[in-house]
Image (tube, rainbow, N blue to C red; front, side, top):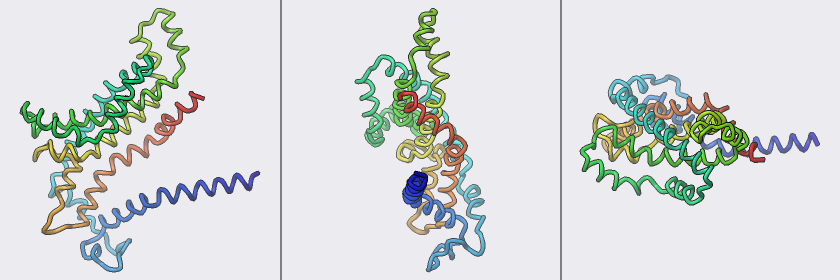
Length: 274
């Protein structure tokens, strides 16, 4: 029995390594590119660990590409879009789950599956008519198209698995629906809110399509800033890789720090539903 259990564990570990190895290899190669001079990046056979490190690739990103401003723009857009999505999506998910509004849930799922490009042209025309183009407001509103369905869909699944006994007892004691949601349902749903928050941050932070169309010169976000480093005349792999890693780092740190909350939030529904 122990041998079979060990074999299953080794097999699961092997499958996990096979699945994540491309992502790990990609990340290591990006880190290698960001730490090498252009001569080493163009060398054949390729060099993974250089003899000397080009730290100037990282310092040059902040010195020459106004990354400080673009980083602040990303923080504002992602923070506002995530905060508004939680403010709208958590109560909406609770209402849909408790009212068993299946049709509304299907609409949310369709909105989640619809590509962002489908919303881009109407939003562009609307913001152009309102005179908001080139500001951060269009990007924040456009990101809600992505973050709100994510939050609602996660919270629907979570609230559907939470026990109703405590809520029913509170209603018997005279609590209204708002007090039940605020003081009973919301504290129980904290793991689900954490997962929704992290996923909303990831999708908003990494969004490129809305930023490339709706942003102005002073309101670009980090993914757009990295894209603008590409040029037909010259492509510097070192600074480009350094920029990409800088964009990835905040989300990566957030995921690592909150990994326990993510696992708890993703598994809590299954445990409570059993």
